[in-house]
Image 1: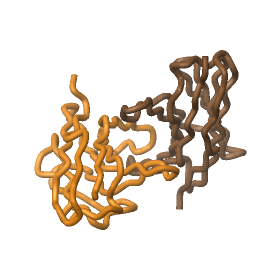
Image 2: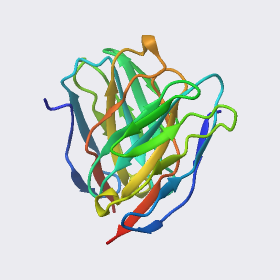
Image 3: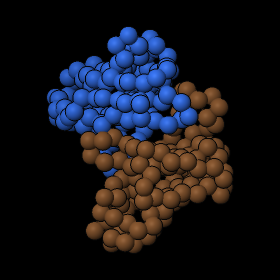
Length: 116
Length: 111
């Protein structure tokens, strides 16, 4: 049972480069999301999706794009990396939001990104 | 908006000591509350949760009680081990499966 799988685990980028962080889940979860983790700030929501073909912005969406063409995959794209995007990125998933309160969110193991 | 405040670390303890990490929240409505743990070099794992007032979540010797009157969800463990060294995050979910996190508290347990 793979759960939520993120790749790559570590990446170094130069300013201005683009890249995609991959996220896949095998639990048939409708809801998927991306967070970034910065020291002393906890995790902040970047983008989320409530189902295939539907995405929306979170708290810190600038500089990131997402798409959701399948239920399983939710890639995060950095179009032009900046040093301020140096962070640890976590993908997460859960069952339908219909029941809302109380759904358990499952996290991937994280992707450590450094932009130089 | 929603927010979570937890005590800053690092918290350094000796093995078998009592651990408390304070967490308070601000939210509209009646959120669910969570504690997540992040061990060194790893992702986040759900430690425990509570979905309504006065619920007590517990797991691996850790406990936290949802206190609506004080808007708090303090994490406690009676006797910590070296293996409990980690960063602990308090979080709330108000609606739509979106989590709001506190800043995290690093705990270091020394033998």
